Amino acid sequence: MTSKRNRTFSPATRIAQALRFIDEETGAVVPAIQPAATYARDENYETRKPYWYRRDGNQTTAHAEAIIAELESAAESLLFASGMSAATAVIDQLPAGAHVVVPRVMYHGVLAQFQKYDALKRLSVSYYAAGDLVELEEAMRQGETRLVWVETPNNPEWEVTDIAAAAKIAHNAGALLLTDCTGTPPCSTRALDFGADISFHSATKYLNGHSDITAGVLSVRETGALWDDICMVRKLHGTVLHSFDAWLLIRGMRTLFLRVEKATRNALAVARHFEHHPRLEKVLYPGLPSHPGHAVAQRQTGGQFGGMLSIIVKGSKQTAIDVTRYCELFYPATSLGGVESLIEHRMTVSGPGFPVHPRLLRLSIGIEDADDLIYDLEQALTRANGG
Ligand SMILES: *Cc1c(COP(=O)(O)O)cnc(C)c1O
Image (cartoon, rainbow, N blue to C red; front, side):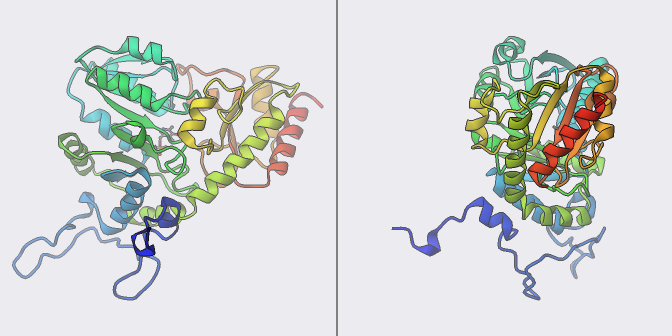
């Protein structure tokens, strides 16, 4: 029999209460923001542990990190000023000339970073088709590959990678597996549980959920030399998340489960409505049973597929751009994972040199009324086709 005292509360419960926060001095159930850049030494001229200078971290940021560590079942989590600075911290600590294996199609900023390091001969980069475990295995170099980067679902095609299988492939060759599951945050996909060594998220997106900060986070199952190196990179690059932004993130995360549930319901409604639409060539959404990664996505997300989907419109590249211009509800803006729905012509945003279909529109489905979103896309498609 489990007594109430011994009950382990679920992450949804713990996160809604920001880990049962109560301010010791005042009893406030909301944390204060600690903005100090520096801390006075004590009477023995010792630094007050654990904080002494903000570039090393502070209590507001640490509180947000503790919440994410709980969501991820991580030993530790570390917050950065953006997703890109968190990604770069991992890339930066790799030894010179290290071999890494990354998806050919992935978030354009991270891909650009790998391409740059490859061109500078700082790293040796091999590519695989996102979701394709055979290609991934072929790209591995036994004892030489240091890092496998998996983005699942990947941007902007939403191919699904089996994290547990990818972890096996990486570990068999002696490499670490990093996952970028920004599209399905840890209320949906707990990557460390499936065998990832490092879980990366752009917290700008679902974790915060309100499009009002940029943030990135790394979480690990085990601390050690690699983690120490990553912590050192954040400290020396000065890329710690600001305490005010950490406070907004704490507030945003309290509703993470609710927001992702609603976004998933809305995205499913939109995907089902448009799946066989005469003006569309294709709907790319892992929540659809017809999606090749559906079964794996079902297992990895528990059915919380998230709000990210892409559509490929019929007609021309200009038809696709026109759809974004005629939308009345969807904002024609980049980013994802906020409460408001966004639409973007991905080729225009990611720029030349990035492989993306010219008629692909990326949709970040928010928490509005699903019928309103469907109406908006319908009327924009009609107008873009001269109707
Ligand atoms: C946004 C994003 C990033 C980069 O994060 P920023 O917070 O914008 O720096 C990395 N990966 C994915 C999948 C993203 O969506």
